[in-house]
Image (cartoon, rainbow, N blue to C red):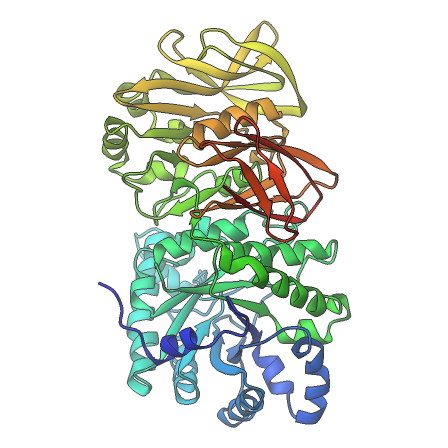
Length: 580
């Protein structure tokens, strides 16, 4: 059932700080409490305010056992509103002691539950809206939690506990004080493991009024989370599928981005390419006080101006239908690794019936009805593309129900590859990869299943892409390297086979090396963005008889010949294209 719009949501739709989106800044409680001399703060705030058109400030009342008083919140609220900046409340539900990583409040403790209730009540007294920073998870393993967990798994215990806390503590407290309160749960970017810490996309978005999305990717290579940059786009679309029309925006920060200013800006670009209604900058103190980030406000302000020029010309995002159930796990962030190989995805938390192509990674095998859903799609002429991890998790069921392919315990190291030009009857060529890649050996029956791409071994070869016909559709298996980042080392010829399998239902696909992202929209618009550190060429293959391509930012036009156009891309530049 569709939720009724409250006062806060109606006001949001009436005001944007840019033509196509709103920009907000999050102010942690320490920043809020430091604002004493308003004239002095106004001078410091100018670094952000003069560079970015801010439409909202989230003012936090609690974090790590530090509180802002009601009087202080009202004082700071009045300051921002005097500048035409709307205000909302904020809470970060972390404990004071962070000596063992990030620690949540303990929801088995009445004292901590009362802290949460008090923080929600304070927000409801001052604001019409409150957002939970992405510490609204549950990772406590104290004696009380162990006792209450009993024989349940930690996942079961935490999901059950957080559902209760959200319904009975957060929502009831907020609505009893301010019936118009818009309660927002901001989810972190680590969606692959939400369930283990109490985040539940299958229930929480229906309990809360709205949700928000963390889109931080920071440093993909030298950071603990190692998140591919495409994730900033994919996670926005995934959470939009969990709460259609109620995913209010994306949120990113500058941390671990000083190695390359573009890495900070790319988080914002991809958040907006995913059609975020609002972008939140975290956080006030870092952006106006930390010497490390002094250049960031001016740069991000210019980025917002740039995107605002063409965002309205982009239609609705489209891509390969990627199904990931709400309660699932496996092949973490694979969609984003493939996104860095030029494959555009449209994420689905529910099975995408009626799509021409459905992509199923290992996580999709956690759906107990996946076999029947696959059969239904294939019977209707849909193509289904699965991964080696999906085959492994489904086990013998996959071989018995679909095709003679098995995941084995054997491995192979490959660096040279082959393709085919006759549907797998023969393989040919020898394409060199950038580096050796470790892959699982997939067992298959020749003459029943066909090899479209392979990796060479000594006196042997190992499938990279397999295909068979099933009813009116086709079923593909793509071999994923043990290190998913090694997908980047598959040569262009192999990546093209994967792209063609996945993109048959799309109006265009690209040919070229990895490190190129492509974003598609339903009105003949697309964006190309290269993340490699050198000039690179890509070729676009159009399904229809396209004649010309126009670059929206420069007005330059290109002639398309025989459905193909080759472009040279500069590093970290957005090529916003219209084709007709």
